[in-house]
Length: 173
Image (tube, rainbow, N blue to C red; front, side, top):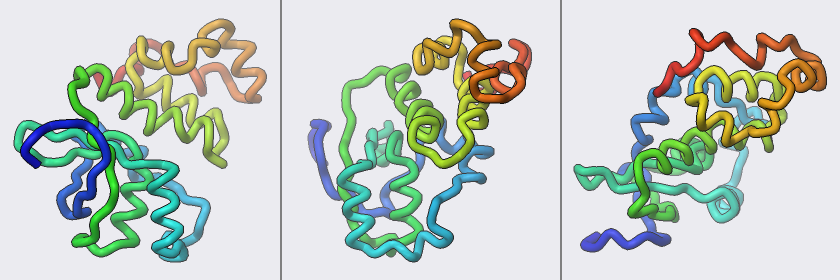
């Protein structure tokens, strides 16, 4: 690709790599749970629908490699279901500062499951407040900071499940 214009393009799976910030989220990536007992149960047609409705977003790094920043779960499913030589549609993101890219990554990794997962919300919220930088966690979930006790009580979990002491926060900066 000669110019870095954003938009949709087709890229071979073997040329897509997870952004380093995503790769450092090993605890989350190791425990990705899917509703299907086996992703292989999905048809290729179903995967194409998934890609259309939950797209994969990429940036081009300094070495001209595509790094997946959002649509991480869709990318993981595609990588498990399709041969590496298969082309998938991605959306190229350009001209965004690092803090915007990082915020998008954290939102995709932690906020999406909070809103769409079958997982207990307390675990997703705990992940957001344990791993995501404080200023970003407050932007992603502003109502949570109003009354920690009431919010925890509403989820039927202990307050310290959601709100770790400051010294345990900020694993990723």
